[in-house]
Length: 221
Image (tube, rainbow, N blue to C red; front, side, top):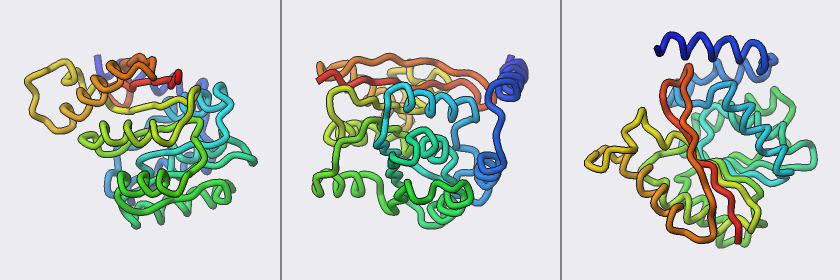
């Protein structure tokens, strides 16, 4: 079955999501980061870009940069008048991302902020950052509940929040799991479910990245 997932993913990407040289270079540069296999797939990158464009997003916050592959998709989606702020823990990863963004010609519309993402996001709140139209959370999973709280402090009614990797190959349904990544995913989904400011769904995904899924959240007030 997983072989079929890979085959279908490859077919769909080849048909609908052709990568140019800049995207391919950004994806391949992941081997220079601390997590070589963690970036979104090309199909997921295109999905994020389409979501941003459909929402008319001009300001995007990304939590988790690595080589900047998803950052590049989002930077292109917001256009020359838009801006992406991306939070990355490791300077070595941020350096790779900056190279990729500059190569693609979008470096001037992206700020790569280095440091623990919770602390960086809190500084944005304290500095009175203008609300973001879309927040993409793709960092350490145990901190997802904190990222959600900070995303709510940095958005407005109508903003979208995407939390990646919440299905965890089905482990999210295991209430007895003590895996911190599963616990973080379950908690952020519970927080979303009980917050009347939010409406949401989770879509499971299969493909070259295996079995996972993401939460799509809209802030209604």
